Length: 255
Image 1 (spheres, rainbow, N blue to C red):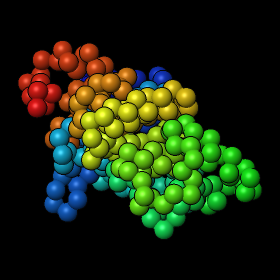
Image 2: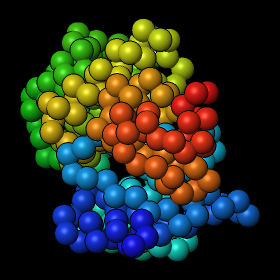
Image 3: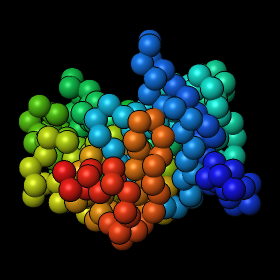
């Protein structure tokens, strides 16, 4: 039985949060994903490791319909989203929070208004309800009392935490992180890694983290998927990847 067939059978037996079924994706003449098959279980922390340019972020973008596969299918919570238009993608996107690599905060808005923005756009909450919800999420990420600061006045680590608070403000079922520790010093990286695990356990959601930071991956993951040349070369626990005898995997870990 091939690995792809085995994963398909697992997906049918226990519906995962996300399932990539032989996904191919190219940009211009560059083939990025080459028949990628990946199952993401509900409630787990899955870290996707791999070198730069291997397509890690492209996987996340498929999960919210920002890009569509050239071939193959992407399922979110049992629904094939591969060919949905923006209107039909809205309910899917409401299930998923996305933490972009640079945070993508609105520089002209205060911390409060950045975090409140999704609530104002997508809910009928009144001002007091929004205030309570924003305060709740800021407390969760350890940033109480900064509501009226502007993004330019924040450190890199604080900007990441504000962006995280905004990503979870609509109570998503899954949270996607794109290189969450890029540009952070080692102490802040360690703190953000611990925060990701704490948020995952507090909200009881599915977390998918794209990174090339091996130490962070080992500390936070339930499972690690190693992406190489557009396909998943290995999936397993942190201890299993450490013991993996594949020379390509070991070379990456040593690096």
